[in-house]
Amino acid sequence: MNALRHGLRSEKAVLPDENQEDFNRLHAGLQDLYQPQTVAEQDLVEQAVISKWKLVRAEEFESECYHEAKNADHRAAILNQMTQIQTRLERSYFKAYKELERIKASRAKAAPQAAPQPVAGPPKEEIVRRQVSWQGKVLFRSENGVGVDNWSDPDYVFPLDVKPEPDKS
Image (cartoon, rainbow, N blue to C red; front, side, top):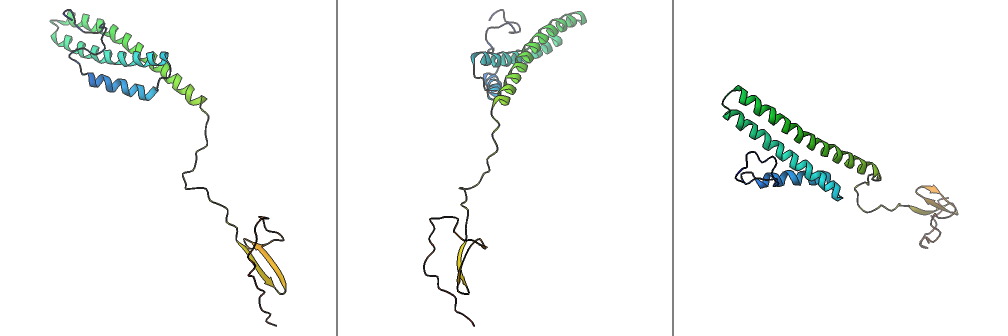
């Protein structure tokens, strides 16, 4: 690390003077967003995270160098080199990003579109109001107010305590 100037070619993603927790948050965010399911997808997430991390590092390094530059020619040289580095990092990030977005969209398209399930309690049973009454001397059956010859449930037995209504004649 004696020759470390900008760390853009470092094998380690996080340098000693950088915050590991910030890197971990960036990594976790992209992991959650894309949920890689294969090694190739995981590599794309890693590529995006490292490219984004190094892009921030490059911008900070460019700012430091620009302020420390001795003259306009030196600043122009720094700006030229850093622009090339930043362009490469941006390209790397956006290639990984686009591929991850494509994979995510194809997964969503392939997933069966399930109809939304209503959030309710247990299924309601159909309520059938059965009534037996005497009309004159004739037994009258009804379900939900509609006269029927037979009950909708053939196993249903109406209680036998139905008495004919008294004749008012």
